[in-house]
Length: 177
Image 1 (spheres, rainbow, N blue to C red):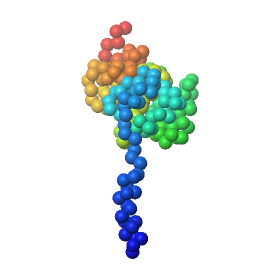
Image 2 (image 1 turned 135 degrees about the vertical axis):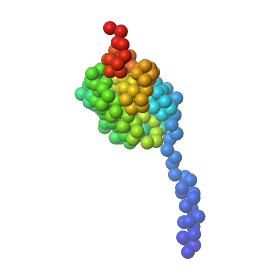
Image 3 (image 1 turned 60 degrees about the vertical axis):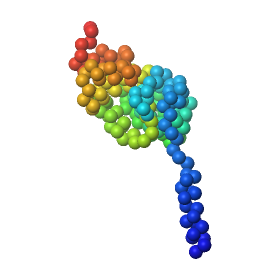
């Protein structure tokens, strides 16, 4: 009986000493130097391609999910799945091959991944952030009901640059051509 009471007395101590998950640190994640990284909203970063070292630093900063928009056969990518698995990161690849891959279907796929991400930060990456911004624009329009101009602005804030004419066309906005 004394042993049982001793174990019961230690239970709160064990529960209190369990390691807490890392606190989400958006500013430190942005400070990693990932190309074109921008904070879309707390816990959600749009960026270019992270390096192996930058990827390895994400879990300690509370980021647990990486969404890669570059196809696995695009130069400089394809290594992330194995690295993410070793780090305990959730890794999802939505292959977006250039501006023609910025589609409503891919925007909805990204929205589903973000809805499933749970707690912890998410990094959505491509080579430069341009495709990420394009999908964020379409996600704003088709998943969140934003008006076309507002959706385009959200895309620009998330990294949309060179693919803007294609995104404008999809959103039914003048392309300026």
